[in-house]
Amino acid sequence: MSGRRRIAWAGPWNARSAIAAFGALVVAELAARGHDVEVFRTETGEFLDLPPRPAPGPVTPLRDASPEAIARDHDAFIVNLGDHHGHHGAAVGPMLRVPAVAIFHDAFMAHLYAGWAEAEGRHSVHPAVLGAVYGAAEAETANPLMLPLEEMAVRRPMLEWFAAFAAGAVVHADHYAERVRSVCPGPVAVIPLAFEGFALPPPREIGPEVVVATVGHVNRNKRVADMLRAMAESAPLQERVRYRLIGPVEPAERAALGGLARSLGVPEPEFTGWVEEADMPRRLASVDAICCLRNPVLEGASASLILAMRSGRPVLVSDHGPYADVPDGLVLKCRPGAEATDVRLHLEALLADPAPARAMARRARAYAEATFTASGYAERLLAHVDQVTETLPAVRAAMGLGRVLAGFGMAPDDPAGMRVADALDNLLNRRG
Image (cartoon, rainbow, N blue to C red; front, top):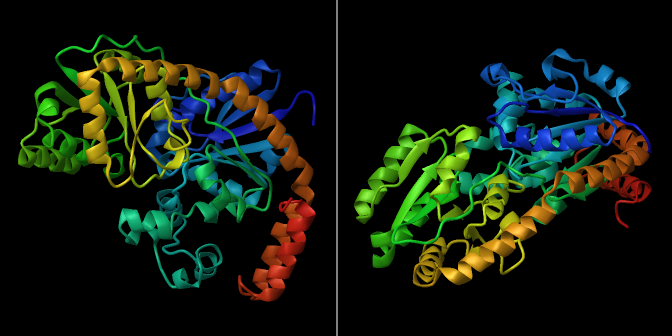
């Protein structure tokens, strides 16, 4: 398709969502290229009451729109999905009803699924669905949130459940692309996340006190405990490093981290709580290094990583998922499972001689500014939408046939169904 497109963009549209910040960048770029973009807000409940971001066209709650009318009146229906029911819950129903290009921001979707299932009065995953995407051993399990986080992230992340209903998909890094390709009936593209954040002050000179910060909602997979353990193992870090947590934190998590710090004999981290976007530059001005540890990796890509790299400050990352995709020599990589040891070594080196880490940070900023752009994202997204449109008749046929076979009671692993799937894969040219 060439020329002016009519695009329905479905996603969160408030100041508290990083995915909404991404959406605002891309929508503005699409509009600047001459396309008509209508935004449909996917928030539910109290999150829909948050003030909307500015937009180049209409902004409508998706719950108030007809999915069939959206499909009829637009050339593309683009749905942004992340693992937060409050921000994305209204997107699930329409995506199940009409063909959509799904942008998967997270590699873990169990909380979105559970929130949607509860709202719909469904309290478990259908056994046939689990058997199809995760294997027969999962077919008798119930709510995906019943497992510990680390096990749930591997056994029932529910990404595949959503991807099976998409006419085409976009992911933001290679680490979860094959999982989406294995079930999505349409084309899947890997496009680096577009994120600019906000203007940050340049880093200050490293002085006697070094401030390390973790940015975003404080939760277990950000490995705050590993940062505290790194400090406990190093006299230089205890003497010179201060740890700041910039973002909201649940009272129980704050109490647990404070108790851990006291038991380790290290200073308690500074908790800022929620910080408005306008105040973030001031909060980061006195930060010398940024900690982007993640284990397990639940996101597809990380806006906080891009923000950290664009800040020109040294960045600590866990060396897996989207963080492993960053070329060597740009960030301070830590082995998953050994983060505390590697954080200690990296920070002790920074304290002894800041110059190498500062030079690395300058290279990272140049890389981020050239890679994670709205113009590049829009260009590749439009090309991918064209590809999805070309395959849409075959995708519709595949999805319709799948529903018919399921109605006949055919099991997901029936050999006849597998032969049909192979034929449709060849038709869709999914196997090269």
